Amino acid sequence: MNTRELIKQLQENDPTGDSEVCVSNRSVIFVEGLPAYYDGRLHKNVYANGKLEKIIITTRGTKVLLSTYPTEDALFDNPDFKVELDVPEYDTERWGKWIEKQRERGREFKVWSNKWKENQAFDDYCKLLYQLHELIADGRGDEADAEAIRDKMDKPGREMSEEQVKKARQLSAELYKKREDKMESKYGYHPCDRETFLKLKELKKHYYETQRNLFTWFRWDRKQEQNRVGPEPKYHPLFVKNEYWQTKSQRRDPVTGSLYSHIKYYNRKLDDQGILELYEKARMPSPEPVEPFDEATLKLIDSLHSQR
Image (cartoon, rainbow, N blue to C red):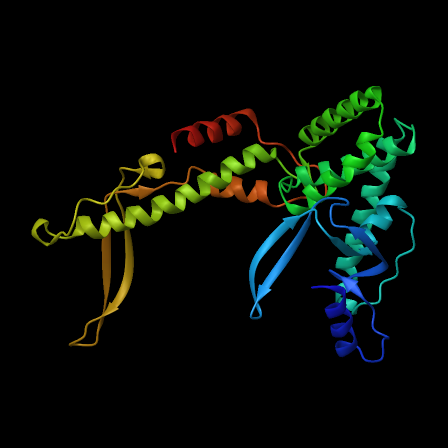
C-alpha cells in the first residue's frame, strides 16, 4: 500500500478524523519518511487483481514508517511510568498482572544495566541485546521480531569500539547463562530448560503417533488371516508393553432389547512412561521459581528421546 491509498482508506474509514490511529493496538506516535534500506529491508506486498501475487524484499525506493511506543517498551524504559486501566471489571486483574510483569522486566533490566554505562551507542546496543535475549529465551529467536531487533543493532554496533564489542559479547554470554540457570521464559519459571522441553514435545508427538499406529495394528490383528488387507501395520515399541488389558462396555441386544456386557481384550498396552505429565509441567509457566526436574528424570527424558 502506498501513501495515496493509505490516506484514501483513512478518510473512508474515519471521515471525522477523530479516531485513534494504531498498529497492533499500539498508538502511532509519529510518521517518518525513510529510504527503503533504512533499519532493515522493506518487505513489499505486490497485488494483482486484488490478490496478493508476491512479496519483494528490497532496499530500493522509499517507505513511510508508522512508529509506535508500546506500553511494554514504556514500562521497560521507566518501570514507574503511569498506566491507567479503562477496561471491564472482569478484565482488571489480568491486565493488572500483565502491567506488573512489564514493570518487573524494566526493574530487572535496570539492575543488569547498572553494570555498564558507556556512550549512547553502547547503551542502545545493550538495551536491544537484552530484548533480543528475551525473545530467544521464549523460543522466538528466529521470528520476525527478533530479526527486526538484530537489524536495529547494526547501527549502534558499527559505532562501538573494539573493546565495547568484546564487552557486549561477554554480556550476551552472561544473559545466556542467566536464563539457563533460572530456567525462565518471558511468561514465568519452568522446571527445565528449553532444550529439554523440546525433547518432551517431540516425545509427546511420538507417543500419540504410536497410539494411532497401535490401534491400526489392533484392527488388523483382530481379523482372521484371510480377511487381512495389506502388510502388517507398524508401530514403534517405545511406548508399548506386551501386556493384556481389556475394556468393558454395555450394549443392547438388537433382538431382545436387553443390555449385556461387552468385553474387548487387547494383547498390547500403551505406557507413556510419565512423559505426558512431564510435558505439561514443563509447558506451563509458574509466577514463582519451581523445583527443577531431578537427575533421574532428565536421564529418562534423554534416554527415551534417543530411542524414538
